Image: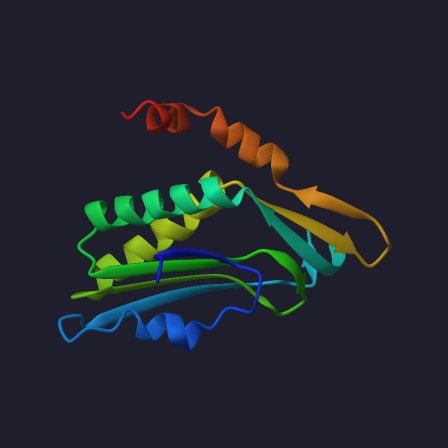
Length: 156
């Protein structure tokens, strides 16, 4: 099983969680991101995720490598949906196991934040009023040109 997965079928948190269990780990932290029925004051009907799969896979693995190097964790996984999702569907799942809880909490937060900022995964919302639009494209572009992103691209 890859540590980072893009899936066009429903995520299975229990199966993912089992892959993180180990007798040496006393802590497990999971983050689940669900599709909500509103965003920025607009009623959302459904959404779709699209990804540049090859690059997302590579960068997702890189994020998990960085989390492992930065925090004292045992194992980490991330799964992200692509395709059409309904309100309440599980869109993204991050799980981290470690010997101690602090590292698991910190690594989980780091992973979801980096996944949202660095991976070529785009969200299109469909609104109740019939309109639709891509979400946070400006924020992603701004992050791509930030000093921290430039340092990352140049290996600093």
